[in-house]
Image (cartoon, rainbow, N blue to C red):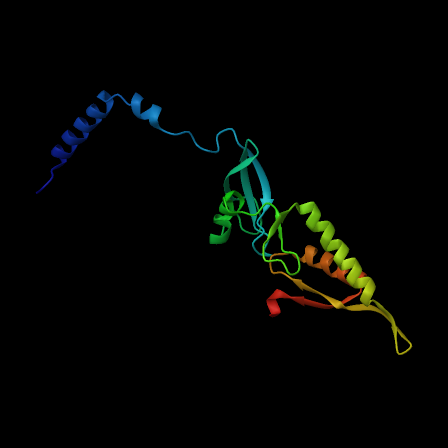
Length: 183
């Protein structure tokens, strides 16, 4: 089939005329509004790795409805990796834990506990372990350490968080510091 210039112009004119005659009101009513309409944009940092990519979270009614890369951020310039693109699924997943799970020694069942209880319990156990195993001197040398606690860093934390974790552990007298990247 050969299409001449004249046939093309006839077809284009007919198509434009039909498009003008069609009533688009029902289609406009059925079209959804953007889920980010009226949402507040909140800049943040992706937590998946220590790169520190910038993200913009759209928040409506206290809930994150969309996540996109921050085009003004100097590290990622608006681009996101596949993990960051799935970030919203972590925030809004129905199986996401919102309470701490605790299994008492010898128990077979997990119990849900509030996060405040878990934090207080962890702090108390660190304190009692440190107090029970802290060495001030060994062979006449001041050592001020405990060898009963170890710290394992994460590739998710940034340099500043790693620095704070190291300072906290050194302040407690912990000598066994390791990082996930070396394991």
